[in-house]
Length: 90
Image: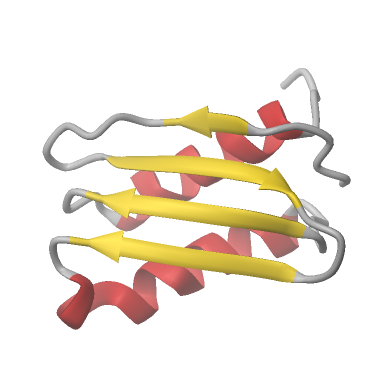
């Protein structure tokens, strides 16, 4: 899947994650900010990376601003942002 435009998903509310995706020329760049970065930063990045790989996204910049979201919420928000960025109807 090719990301063709910037897109967002989620909120900055407690227990949610705000995800922004934008096109990139080369590679998948994931940036994570979180209130629990020290404890769960690697897990948050892994969930985002796995979701992007599952959708076949190879070139994109993903920025996540986490407010304590659980794994399924992170995956859902990332998937939604990626689909919006690729202009795919789910």
